[in-house]
Length: 336
Image (cartoon, rainbow, N blue to C red):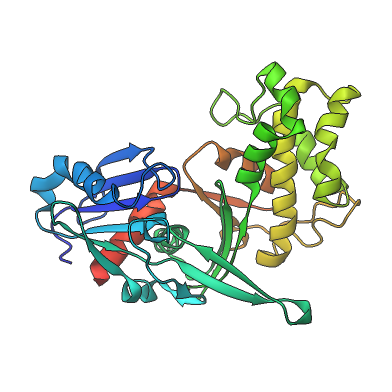
């Protein structure tokens, strides 16, 4: 693609989609945000939705193909695009990209995601996949001017990843966000939250909710997540905390255990000794941006992860998720 005229870039995920009109220099001219993720709309509707998104920008993008990433390329999306195997560099993604056509016949290109297999004890193989986050990761590397970094991408299915020499060499998915949603809405733990209207997200942007810090402390002091979960209810019933603190506590507990599991794998030098069961040891941390965890996102979860990582002793570099995905998509558009 020529990099002179504006182009249209789309991050189409599970619950939302974000469309950007981007100038050749990478500046975002306009954006559209919709809740029409793949959970809400079927593959048959997606070609028409893309035309609706493109309509206000049609004169400016001309005939340039629209570039898409995310769950739109999954088995439940518009058209399944084969994964690229990890380790992989950003230049590997356009090689597997797939061209599709909108309802009006406009050309669009869907980028693939990444997959990896990890060998565990006893010869077991464990697989993982991502779609969309890889574009943010490579975009973030470009924005930071770095070849290596450890990334945390909070969300319904949080991702952690490690990049070295400009390649994503390892990543893992943590079910933290969806587990919180299921437990708070469809389990015994959530019933006390309903009585108080408690929420894990403060009404004040960037403010840490009640109970969150206690949940983080409990994640570092107890032996395992399964055994700690019921304390969300038991501590309220025995008045160790209030029901208003319950939602924040559960969020802190889940995020705390995610970080306790992820840091030794993805950033062992950043926080040595984190998560020794029952010890409450937080580790020493590492100074400087090269030893920091890059937290990529643009929503209310990011301050919670920043607080949790800081409490664990890690240094944090926050990076806007929209900026990262736009940078990644723009790089890919220039390779096609």
